[in-house]
Image (cartoon, rainbow, N blue to C red; front, top):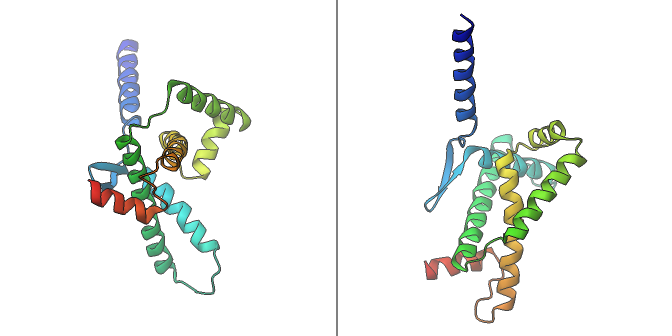
Length: 172
């Protein structure tokens, strides 16, 4: 009897671990890349909060604000994916040392929040997953690398998101 219960508990734990490691459903695609729903939800929440705090004299209904948040979210995600593609095209990658620095910074951040439970609360409060946190940290380094590379390159200066879109339209 105890063996049956242990086998059942073990099977349940294995099933939970398999399902908890899978990505959330795809919310949108940028080219061939899938953007999962958790990332989309993070940007949507972030943009909706930003729009609700802005007071530009124009009063938007809740539906209009949500629609605008969706537009800004999609634009942001597309720009992020274009930046990642530019890094790939230029063969810009994080070194092993930078990867280790990211991991060390994350561990310091977790400790500063009081440990794992504080970190999980931070993720929850910011509508973020651990996987997205890691992606955002990597992107900040890659963005800096891309900026530095383009600033040094004489023939490929890309000054803003519009120019970046034109660059990819002309070259890909």
